[in-house]
Image (cartoon, rainbow, N blue to C red):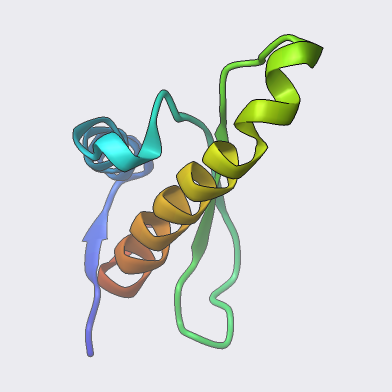
Length: 88
């Protein structure tokens, strides 16, 4: 399957919108998009996300919720990696 080619800024905008529109991601924030040589899947980028920091007391209660949010963000990134590459 071919991938759509986007500039890094276009890809970041699309990815930000997808993460923002998915309530399962919580307050996930796109930290970075890294462009590299194509990997074994043919994709030439990867992404890093951040989540708002919580206090140590909240951390224990929110660990399962954070894990769910991370899984949701990861699934979006994986789907996007299947459909887009960054123009170089």
